[in-house]
Image 1 (cartoon, rainbow, N blue to C red):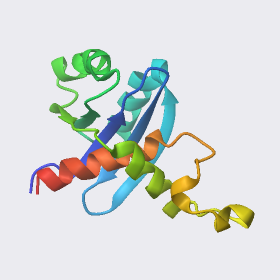
Image 2: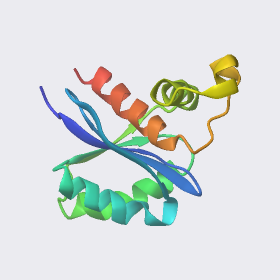
Image 3: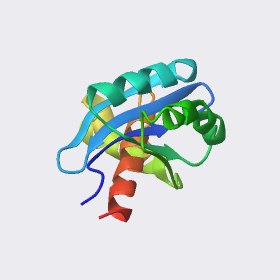
Length: 138
């Protein structure tokens, strides 16, 4: 069956989405972190959830983040860093956000496609990346 749990990262210049996703149980953890704190928090999540694979979005800042993660690979703390296509993940993450946090009050009258989430949704994008990884690696 292969890898069953990953740490997924939606990289960005200022902030990154992080998620720990289990193939059978879904998202176990999600958060948005400042980019400068990404490596230390990712290291902590890898240990806490016993993950050996990182799934990394392939767009903004991905090469820089990959380079920052390389020491984990070199020291055998992880087995692999896998790039996943991010195309359309922000739109899907927005939809996923509204499913998890339905609008209330007058906002519930506006079509969800027109609403802008009141917070960063990079963590939902990281979950989408992990799901894409699992779809490709059944």
